[in-house]
Amino acid sequence: AQTVTQSQPEMSVQEAETVTLSCTYDTSESNYYLFWYKQPPSRQMILVIRQEAYKQQNATENRFSVNFQKAAKSFSLKISDSQLGDTAMYFCAFMKGQGGSEKLVFGKGTKLTVNP
Amino acid sequence: SQTIHQWPATLVQPVGSPLSLECTVEGTSNPNLYWYRQAAGRGLQLLFYSVGIGQISSEVPQNLSASRPQDRQFILSSKKLLLSDSGFYLCAWRGRQLNQPQHFGDGTRLSIL
Image (cartoon, chains in turn brown, blue):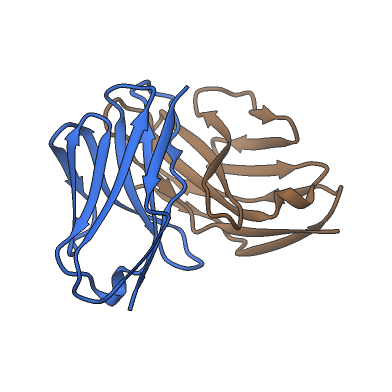
């Protein structure tokens, strides 16, 4: 079974600075997908960024980028120029790359606080 | 564009009462559908998923059940709620293509008294 580990329960960063959230996963699959979701205080789950395991290039979405290290099974999220609106819980998630139901396996989350 | 609707947003129920949470998706057909529960300050636990009408898979044994009476409708039910059923319930959908992420509804905050 796949597992996802987020080793940082809480983190804080000053506004405009850069922060990196870590995520590691365990799987024997060769084809899979990785995601970062953001859950602000409103509790809505918002997709931040995704990475296909077969792609070597790290995904980037505006101020959000990932460092995907397949051999190390590591998938960290970097937030540049942090903004107050980035304050949220961040969840790393894994999905097998087969057709069908494909369920997400979530980490326990990292609570990020951006300070003014 | 696709949208997902989940209601009610907030629900307070006494122990032993029944439950029905509803989720509908618009703008897509034949989606995969999911129900998650999130306890306070914790991650998401997958409860049920469905790949088609009438097809329900349960991930965790519990007093909850799910049904999919229509292609884009997913219902979470209970005949008798327990205190431990309190939490935040999220519905999600996903398209059939391999690289599609899950998209979530706004959630239902359920409090059991």
